[in-house]
Image (tube, rainbow, N blue to C red):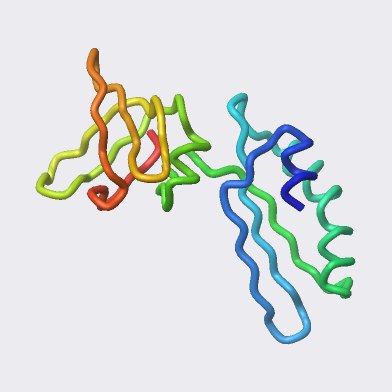
Length: 133
């Protein structure tokens, strides 16, 4: 599913799935720098649904495709990478104040933010909460 969605020009932010009785529920959050429209969600839905039905061998699939939303809480290093270039606010260990900046660079251990005219690095372990702004 990932190569198909990426081939359509989107990144997968999150996939949630669960089985409830006979029905299989899938939540898919997609992103691209230009934004995600309702039409984009519909296009991904129609492209991905038959593939999920085939993989799960059922036609009883409930699929929801959405965008991350403007106040999305970032959950892992992959999400920081997806949102490079976007404004973020973070609560970090040892402070009760939000740190605000633009995600400039990420790797597997840390995120680099541009805060006004300087760059500051934060390890993921030191981040208590992060949200898109």
